[in-house]
Amino acid sequence: MAHGLALDHAAWSSPWRSRSVRDKGTLSLGLLLAAISLPPFPGGAAVAVLSLVLLLGPIRVGWTRLGRIVWLPLVSILIGVATVAVSVSWGASLRVQVTPAGLDQAAQLAVRAVAATLAMFTLACSTPMIDLLSSLRHARIPDPLIEIAALIYRFSFGLLESAGAIHQAQEARLGYSTRSAAMRSASMGVAVLLLRSWDRARRLEAGLAARGYEDTLRTLEPARTRSTGFLVTSVATLAMLVAGSVGWMVLR
Image (cartoon, rainbow, N blue to C red):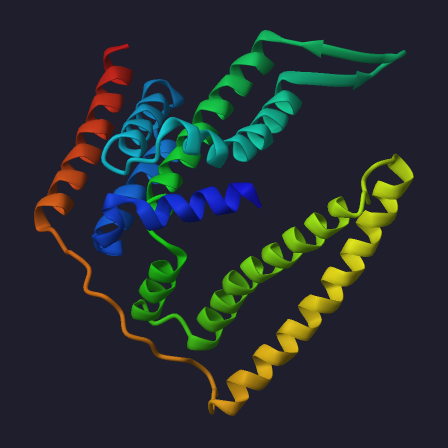
């Protein structure tokens, strides 16, 4: 959950939080499309560099927080790339080998995956989940789907708080002093967390029903800055990125 908390903290503290989701979404989705459609070199690499500059510059994530955010996706990418780079055959015996073609394909996959991940983080690290859900409502997504997503998002932090309190109480009672005690404490912690989450969900449902909840709870939304200049600059940057990548391929 440290990954999720770091991402949430980055979004709430970002200077781009006040910008319109339309503006940030155009830039982020444009970078994502460029990462998956342009050649990995130089298109994907350029997207990765540009996204990294945005995250560390205007979005102000910081190296430490960025490391806490991206380590889990990077591990997942590394595992996927390793399965592509290594080929396994079953001839007369088990044969594991690394071929130049496999390494080349793995390198291209790694660049595309890293570029696409960083491109999506330009939106995730600058836009809280609440703003994203509000933008989905403006996009005419059915309210029940949005409310389910919002409840899951809010409920996850309640579970995280409960899990932290349970773990802290168990540590205070030396519940992790030995391996057998740690296994017993972990199983008891999961059981207690399940009961608490069930009770919290029941009380949440009762509270919503008492407030006359049917399909949605409308709340006030702060005004977001819509900048034509930002939008034009984003589109121009994406166009230059595509033109440079295509030109490099033609000249090559």
